[in-house]
Length: 139
Image (spheres, rainbow, N blue to C red):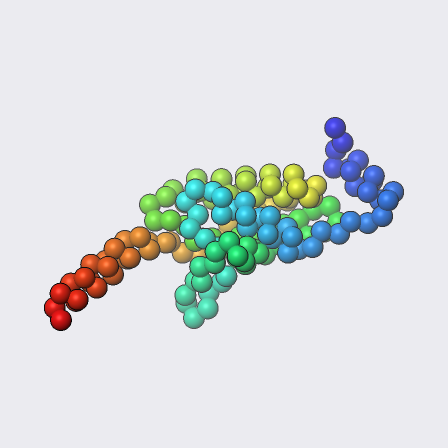
């Protein structure tokens, strides 16, 4: 089995391979959303409201810096209510590191997790439904 150093030197014999930041971001976003307890990715705070993003735009909520052989990743996550945040964050770090290193051959030097919000949508939807039903009875 070749080490990362062997892979990089072999690649140089045939030409250069550049992996776009967005590709690393998509891999990291997919790996993060596969972890149980992650409600979604946050595109950042706009007017104090975190925008929930689905699978269509996986590089949102992910900031990456890619060098020749290393990458650093920042993830902006919304978690489900009731989960243990430190445990989920650790699982995200492990999953993202493994996925990016396996798929790209880059050495992941850090995966920073930024919790941007807590999803309590299930309860809110149930309350909204109950309000709609009670208001329709009043008419």
